[in-house]
Image 1 (spheres, one colour):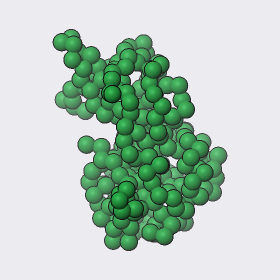
Image 2: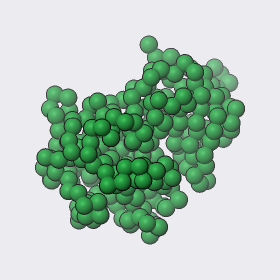
Image 3: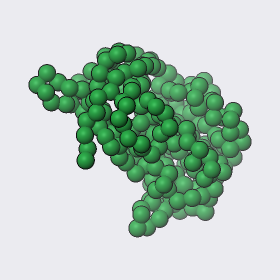
Length: 249
């Protein structure tokens, strides 16, 4: 049965003035699978808890939980989360849930993780597990943002590039400026003209690829349409395919 647990902020990271991560301790939080999400909330003066779902960025084996978020203008919760400091309390829903997990994805040679914005969160959790490296030979993380400063966790990602050189490929994409060491444009267009595939020297095919998508609904819609034209299909338990996804609003 779902229940609210008490948690305490132990660290916050401000990637810029509107993108932040919170790390918090929650001793009774149950085990979860990388890629899952939970509800995070704050107790109000009237005794009610205002909450929203957030993917867990941390690896399942970590002793602390972590989320990445933006303070949505006019939002009921996210601006308040943005104000939290180390030592402040919050609420976390247990158990976590969600099916954007490797156990639900068929095996293949290559795994493509395609994210925009805070949608990169579940993929960071997945990349921090041994399961993903034991299951797939090549792993590509395509991470899109509007501005260069909105690309978070770059040191962590660079660490995987070093550790799994030749197997792990990172493609940052910035849509509104020419970023440093990143492609410029929209992810679907860069896939359509094979810019991304050429950069990592891998092709996307139904024979060799599984694709996981998370983030902006329009990116997901456009990318699914493109992948379908390329011969891939949505993955369902009753009808195995190649595309797994989670929209973020």
